[in-house]
Length: 272
Ligand code: HEC
Ligand code: HEC
Image 1: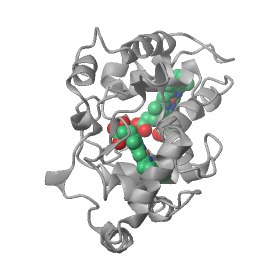
Image 2: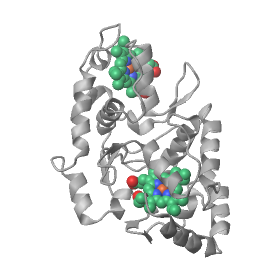
Image 3: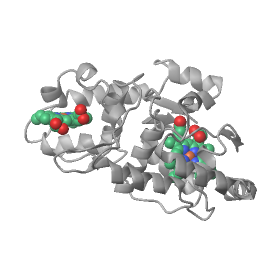
Image 4: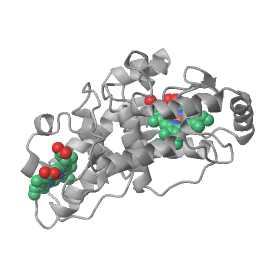
């Protein structure tokens, strides 16, 4: 999404001139209590990739994201903090203890009542249990350990709770999703609900699901978090950027996970 400005203006013109757009978005918003996209039509971003990237994601030896997964496994077993404990000291083998965990995040932490992304949850264990300094967002360490944990849920369908204390956070995420923003005055839905399947510059617009993250992007030449991907979309429409770890990203991630409910996790995905 680091496309040059003039190209984006063209795209915006195309989208804004689509007179049916706002009507359909409004209808989508009203129906959001049910499903944004019916299960039969739910498609992972994987399905919008060319054959080369599909092959790269599917082959663990060719998938560059697996390097972070391996680093994450090492970190999992490395003692840290004043407690001198590793993640494994308490959680044992992640292949068993972390299976399916990433598929139900973001989730509300019962003790604090706060909605936590998987990354926030990991840092919580790091500061409260290991008594070590939290990892910076999108640092090599946090990416590696979240890739390692998310990888244990590969193939597990996303299933989040939007009940109880999560309800208000879900509603905030949904509102953000359907609200127009940025100089281009587009909402997420304009691209990912109304125009998926169409080509935008060299990319095919997908339904915008979170199930591949953290994912390796060729453009980044690195693994990146869902937040980094969302920031790329926001900067694409020239919208204001929220700081990493901002609660609104967690709200949006919860809405995205709910919207993608049923899609299996693919982390680490490979994307353009
Ligand atoms: C001293 C023990 C201890 C250590 C060390 C520890 N944790 Fe935890 N962790 C816990 C406990 C206890 C919970 C469950 C608390 C709860 O019920 O939510 C937890 C919860 C979690 C969860 C959420 C699990 C779920 O089912 O929602 C994740 C993810 C996690 N830890 C990751 C890590 C990682 C990564 C590390 C190492 C960087 C780590 N933990 C280190 C004790 C520990
Ligand atoms: C101008 C069109 C446009 C807008 C508006 C837009 N995106 Fe995107 N988004 C893209 C393109 C292009 C990609 C990369 C190709 C793809 O996977 O769709 C992308 C990718 C994504 C992905 C990764 C999908 C995957 O499988 O890798 C997610 C998640 C996403 N967008 C969410 C959002 C959210 C949330 C918003 C609103 C804050 C948003 N997008 C706004 C165009 C847009």
